[in-house]
Length: 178
Image (cartoon, rainbow, N blue to C red; front, side):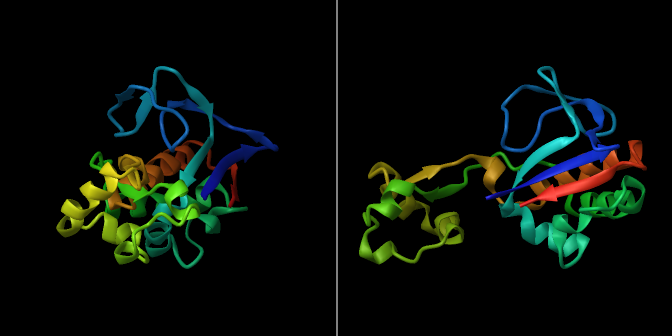
């Protein structure tokens, strides 16, 4: 599940500097002085798809509605809150592992009884990694990569990108789909 976040003016996506982000594409980014990473293979429209895994961080820093609360507001109305959230969370992306169950293990009922009910938090607790490595060996768990981890820096990076767009497009309006 994810959020699709758009910034539009006159019902058209605004143009932004090329960037790399969300779970959409894997490209080598270039870091500019403002801390935002821009891609050589560009997405130049103000649209990003972001995992729901960051939702708790968004709600903590943007209010009860989280990122969905941007919907219908302008860049000018949201830039300060987005930047404050980014500043509080930091923007260093998590690059470590993030373990989750294989869908086939869940649907096929192949999860051993002693691990049924384990959440992603339990799979990602370093105290459990010896057991997790056995589950990986059995093909029941896999590393989805750092993007999916609900870490502060991952959520902060998204908020920093959105703040950058908002500051540069104060009259544009957010559209958020879940």
